[in-house]
Length: 148
Image (cartoon, rainbow, N blue to C red; front, side, top):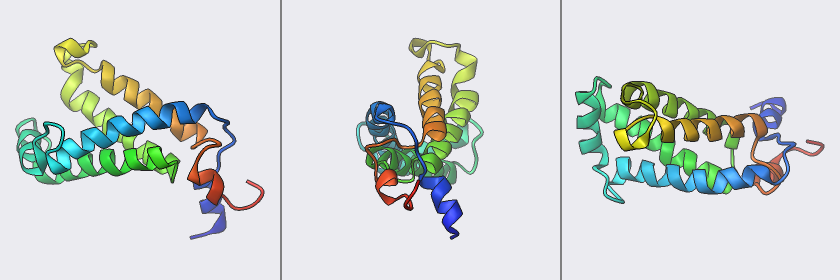
């Protein structure tokens, strides 16, 4: 991998503010991914989530559950650690776009109706981290090549 690409992935000029997003949003994504992958926290695991995804037209369901759960769990872990935050946040933003349009958009805004407000908030937080990078308190900042 070229040094320039590594610099772009790890670069962050942001101060402490991204930490306020990374910690809670990372925890939320880890928990939701764990529901899909491991059936933790009341989730249905890959099999159950895959069957549900097939039922709403996201096929093959098992693969879609693996991709969504993997993006959420490992992307959330990346946010929490502050490691490769830009690509992780981009994957999470994409996952939230799929969730919003494939699952929640038809139900209106409010979460009480299974609407898209929660997905929209997570999309906004993820996009913010794509643009800002991990911030000062991050592994990205520690690992960035000198001068960046």
